[in-house]
Image (tube, rainbow, N blue to C red; front, side, top):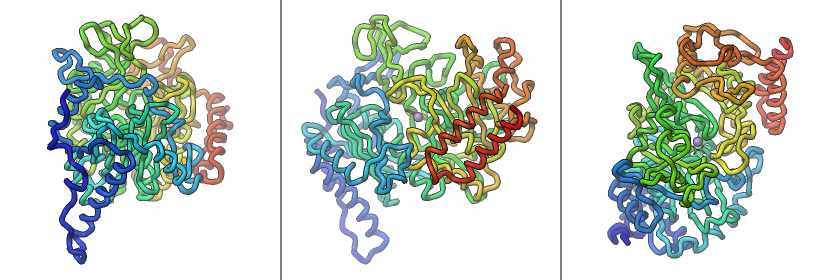
Length: 612
Ligand code: OXD
Ligand code: MN
């Protein structure tokens, strides 16, 4: 068995203690105390969890390869067919640990109202006591890794750092692919002074002893009992969405569950769009879209596929950075037709989690379009019964491997956003696309987003639930305050992006999709850009502006007769009921709901009444 070189095994104070600065030196003293704070925290965690050894991660490729070798030796990672999938490995998680656990995820604020009805809440003291008891001695016999990371380009004024302490080498290598991790992040922490403290242990993997706790007031995360992505890679949902959304409200920016995509026209102009969809609703596919042959000259650039941090610049322009540096994408359904860019990207240097295997040790998943499964995601011979790969099987790969990765994804100031697009998975009612009448209306449309649940979280799949701004599982504070924060942007800029709603998932009465989706979604993006450029007129309806049928280029699409008409139709009676349901949903948030949001909902309700 290979082990980590003793040179890499260090204790925190030894490696990072630095010579004391003179107490009257204001420049250097804070820097010293910043790393002292980190050292003291690492010491305190080690005292509680009692690891056999501590490794400070430097984020180097050599470290990544060492950890991969160690995990291949102990069976945590299985090497895939290295001729066909060089640098690729399979990890099988515990079968009871395959998705985010929303019912075990808590936001722990001093005042319960600050967490809101959208979050599970526990008082901070009680939460610390509960989870600290689980951490007592949890790392005995294990190695404790200290992982400094930066969310966002390392030199971006908008980037933020964190340190994750974990006993999972699988988490460390995933963090290496998903964040800017290691020495560069540590140097930034030393400069900035503040960072999010994340403590993670896979614990016993007992689902009855699993908690993901957030303490936004003290910038802390504690996660115990799961090794799965969103529960364990603390830079992602826990930091970049739940904690960051709290910080963003305090500081006047937005942390959102959005992809960022550049759409380049044949003339060479590029519009950047930020698009929010719930988990497993095609964000990665849209971010990497390949324009169909019938749309010559159009090009798509990926900036991010899951999270956007949005700031207003001095001129009132909303700008976005992607805090992540990799993709943790849903594998099933990824193929040459749905997402060739992802399909090609994950041919090398990828960690797969919970996929099936073919006879010749290649990864396999439903709708891969090639090969047959021999072994299912649990490692059993595939019986032909049910899915061979887990429906929430994932790939982790660095973003720079994507053939359409935008250079501007590394730009410290991010990219200017022309349009914000919301959407959900709705079989019925929601048209293919519509535009909100103004920012306030857009916030109301987004607050009312509904979508069918997916395998990305534990629980029933296919149940329609409200998922405002696609942030239901991720907003780190009371949605009522969050909507007020969104509305407040209208007071700070009169050049905000236009707001749209799309639905790729409408079905006919036989359950067939009405819209082809995937690469063809470019046709809808073109309409959105045409609206942003002021080149296209629209039909004004009670729910918003809809395209004239002729303005969605569908001439060569193989669609059922009348499908486009249905997709662009507004079912007034259905919307009347929908907007009433949105009103009831807002009511559940009580007096904190901003008046302006209520007024907008009532205005749309009245407009619907007037026409139905
Ligand atoms: C994800 C999710 O992993 O939303 O991105 O579940
Ligand atoms: Mn997501």
